[in-house]
Length: 273
Length: 272
Image (tube, rainbow over all chains, first blue to last red; front, side, top):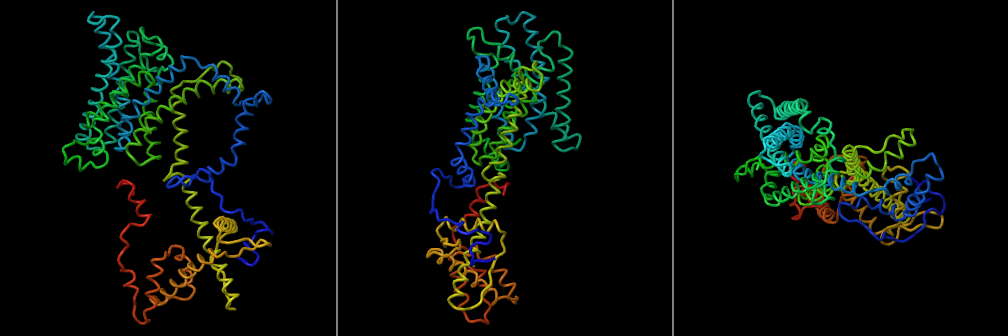
């Protein structure tokens, strides 16, 4: 290294004293690593702006390119149905994310996977029961959907408990670890659910494709009679979300202890999973 | 508690899966929480963030499924493709969001690690540069020979020069050469002092060759603060022949934890 001629590799007069210029917005603490990114955005925002604005008509100039113009044109056809689908999906996502967060914290995300699968026989059984009630005349046509929803809730809860119980049994009797037991149980239950769907495909409005991949578009079109812009499934998911939110707020302390210090929660009498 | 969480999960999964399908439900259970876990370590924020991320995921996913496939597939020659399954696109958007979170996460993110590493390397290169400038001035003053210390690559030296200029520790001469400012001389002095104190201390307590002493001091000098410097000086003032290394190492620790250990204590026990 050659200090006399300045920093090695520099050309003459390369270093210019610019003083200490701080960017207007500077992150502190653990986000400070993003500061170079912010400086980049602050210096190059005009480039991003040009790309976005210019990109809108880019596709007209160069017809070979798929650019913002097409996507924005498509987005401008957004209708109320799209809003309904988005809202339904968002409510479903939120109602799943809440218990999912606790499961991930407790390092039991595999259990969530298992529950999502093994709920299928519960749901199919709920369809059986609801249609049976309707056919036997206990439930009128106007009440059918509410009854079906309640049956789904009960069936899913029972299927979840069945999963837990069977897993514990397989683990104890088969001398295998928890993951393996869970894998055995939920695949069997899911397969049973698929078989049940196949057997009754003609009687019940439920088919394997819709159970696996969902029918969000159709579900959002199926609205309440009294409130024509509100899909039924949005109502169901919203209610579940609110109930889960209430439960989380109610048992926040217990859940937190059980998630972070299982031994302490055991000694306090809160059963751990 | 176990069974209520289980039942709540099962009910949410069943209700969601009659609308969005069982494959997506698994993604919805895990992805938002996983992203939130990367972005924060506070429990309350994690819950709120995962709910918000789930909603964002769903809306963006539907918008993408609605708007992107048609233009793309028209170009590719499949005009019959109108839109895609919203469920699948929500999962795809979730995966992309997770990838972005892995990149920018504050503690464990890839970008953040690169930035941290670059900052440390630049600081060390800047220290070396500062020390060399000081030694050069000193050799002019005392007419004693000197050798540059530190081995850093060219770009590191450039970054170090820029870093020092920005902080006003050096000034650029007319021909592009760097000279120390008053503040820079102060910093360089304490740095070189740390280096030499550490060398002296090592020399008094361990039988090492000059080169080994120099290398060790060159590594350690960046981490020696004023307090350790003071303690080293006190140690070096004691006449030689008495081994003070043990006493120095056994000195009581500072009462407050250093920033590094405080950062360590922010993590839950099993993640340290």
